[in-house]
Image (cartoon, helix red, strand yellow):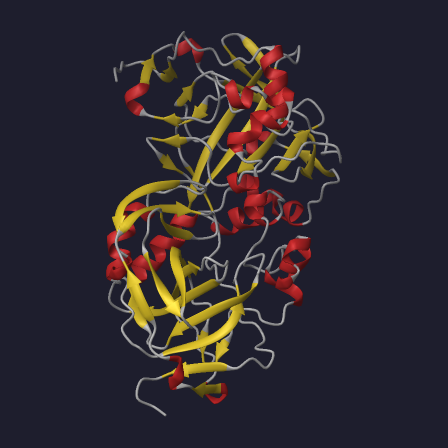
Length: 491
C-alpha cells in the first residue's frame, strides 16, 4: 500500500475507478433488496419478508429469489458489505476530494422497520458533498454487529447515514463502525425514544445530525449496493447497553427471542412470539429445572452412560445466541435404554441453565444426540470457575474468529476430549431450552461440576456478539416430574 504526505483517502479499485454513486435502475432494485433502505415508510402487510438467518429459507443467500425486484441481491456485481482488506486498498491523495459535511438541525422521526431502527429527517438536515455533487441527508439506521469488516474483523455496531442527490437517483452512504466502550453520545440522546419505538412513526422534534461524531477524516470509499460508503476508518465506541437495546426493539429473525426480560422477547414471552413455540409457555415438561436432592430418586437400574464417541470432521458455528460445534461425519453415539443416539453437535450456555439445589454455576455444555427414530437425548455438563477446560482450549482459536451466522471448518475434532469426570448423573424427561422448546427430550445431567476459566467463558460470550451477558433460560417448574439419579454401587 503506497502513501504520500497530503491528506489521503483510501479508495477501492475493482474493474474500474470507483465512484460513490448508484444510478437509478440499480438503485431502485437495491433499495427494495435492503428493506427499502431509502424509504422511510413502514412495511405493509404485503411486503416480502426477508431474514438474516439462512435456515428460514429467506436468508441472505436467497434474497435475490424472493422478489424479482431484488435480483441484484443474488446476481449483482457491486454488492455490499465487503471486507476492507488493507492489501486491496490504494491510498489516493486527492486533497480536494475530502468528504465535506454541512449538516443542520431539522425535524426528525423514529420508527421500527422490523429489521432495524430508523431515524428520518423530515426537513432540510443538510448534505455531504462528494466529487462536487451534493447528497442530501435522509436517514440513519443501525446494524448489530457491523456489516463491513476491516481485515476480517467484525465490530459490535455499524451506523449507516443515508444520503441521496437532488434527483433521487443516486445514493451515498456513510458507515461508522463501533466497538464496545464508552456510550455513544448520539445514541444516548435517542435512548428514551428507542425504548418506546413501534412500527408507527414517532416525532423526535428537532434533531441535530452534527451530534453524530465521525472522529476522523480518513475513510474508505468504493462503489457498492445500499451500503455505499465512504466508511470512516476510525472505530468509535458504544456501550453494551446501547447495543442490547437496539437488538431488543427490532423484529428481525436473528433477534426473534432474547434472554433478557423487558423487550417483549424474553423467556416469559417465548410461547407468544410464534405459534410453533407454544410449548415454551404452556408445556409441562420444560427444561432446564432445579435438581433438588430432596426430590431425586436414586435408581441404580439406569446403568452407566454408554458412550462410543470417535473423532470426525467438524465445524464451529456462531448461531447468534450461542457457539456450536457441529460434527459433519460419524462422531459416535450414546446408548440409552437400548436405543442409539448419534452425536450431532454441542454448544454452551453461560451461566449454567440447570441448577443444583438452587445453585447456578458459570457455564453449561450441551451435547445433542438424535436417534434414527427422531428422538433427542442431551447430555449436560456443568462448570464452575477454576482451571481451564481442555476441550475449550483446543477450540478457542476457532471460536474467537467465527462471526454471527457463519461457520468455519475446525478440522478433525474428537468428542472423546470432552471430560465427563464422573459416572454419576441425573436423568429426567424435559425439553429443548431454546424455542421451539420441543418436549420429550431425554436429559442426562452429570452430577460432577467441572471447571472452566473466566477467560474461556468471556471468550464464548464475546464471540456471540448479542449484547447480553448471559444466554441461559431460567429454570422451569418440574410439574411433578421424577428425577432419577444414577450412582454406581448404590441399591
